[in-house]
Amino acid sequence: MTNQQDNQEKFSYSDKEALAKKFIRVGDEYMKEVFIPDKDGKLFRTYVRRDKGTVQDDLGKNSDFYRSIKKYEGFCLVPSHTHYQQVVQGFFNEYYQLSHQPQEGQFPTILDLLKHIFGDKLDFALDYLQLLYTKPTQRLPILLLESRARGTGKSTFGNLLKLIFQDNSAKLGNAELDSQFNSIWIKRLVIIVDETSLEKNSIMQMLKRFSTETGKVTSNEKNKAQRQLDFFGKFVFLSNDEGKALPIEKGENRFAVFKVPTFTETGRKENPNIESDIAKEIPNFLHFLSKRTLVHTEESRMYFALESYYTPQLECYYQNSLSPTAKAIKELIMDSFNYFEEEAELSFSVSNLYEELEGRMRFLDRSKIKKALIEELNLTEQKKNRYTYHSLKLAERAAIGSYHPTNENNYHFQFKRQQFQS
Image (cartoon, rainbow, N blue to C red):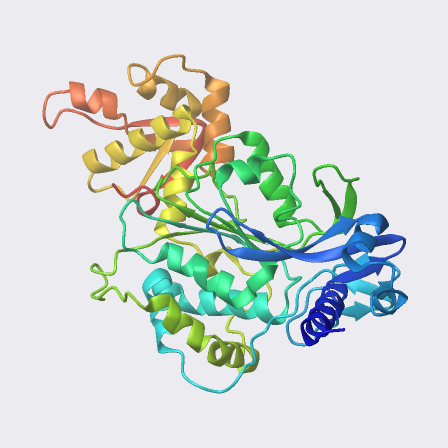
């Protein structure tokens, strides 16, 4: 045998030996570790099924190679970043180990980005990321970062999550989230949806269910049997469709919504090397997260109390979700407080409101008025007793100084000025 033939044979054997390490046998099935590109060309790791005949084509029938293929009872999905196990009770863990090695140090770029995006809710952001890292199965609010403007850093935040959680994260578009095949994201800890604008009620119901899921969910993969698995994913939405990205109903506490300013608005210069700087700081940041004390205590099924992440932008969604009747009532009350400047509180019965709203909106209905007052504006009907009725419609028609409120005796609702500031 010539030296060239000898080198080729050695290379071939070594090459197959390395290839064999990419295979595992789970139960009766052979699986191969592969790296699939996403829509941005970045690779994420997964395992795909291979027939035994295909494995033999790749490795030959040399038994040495088959002995090096590791064997497991089945798959499991056990997320952990601080006490990771590749094999759990003889089952192969599909959750990926992070490559980061936490170490003490500074992380000025990451901290400045979080201050820029979350402002006075920085403690919430740090607690959110700490829980993601140290307690990955903890349910957390769905994040929505939005702005019409460019140069805000919201996409950089998405990339920060990708850099931290690596193959345990997925970045999707709207179509991929809407697809019946969910295997690309169903097993991920962080699911980042870019350019979000979702109007389908079915998707919103899925998001609500998954965000608070405590049982099994179904994984659908093309040309494969469905699987039941535990879901612990956290959704993060990035959108330019400000105020309209998701149909969030009033009182819905699953969503934390932040309007992200531009770097110019917060007095910062754009850093062209921000992602490389972030990547260098991640080991330091993870060390910090593993050592810090949480600011917020567990208060709800999404861990945080609503006040911890309540923002004017979330309120904007609440108001946009009001029915036409509720919006008309709110507008009437605000106009009434503007007219009756000395009053700190106003009272109306359902009949009073019906009379006031005539001419402001079509298709008035007393039952809809009462429903809007109780279910959307969160008001409580007072018992039947006397109250002072200030009619904006009559006051505007009367001569200056001639209008006088009337005393009435009926079931009614009370409106406080501070709740209806214009």
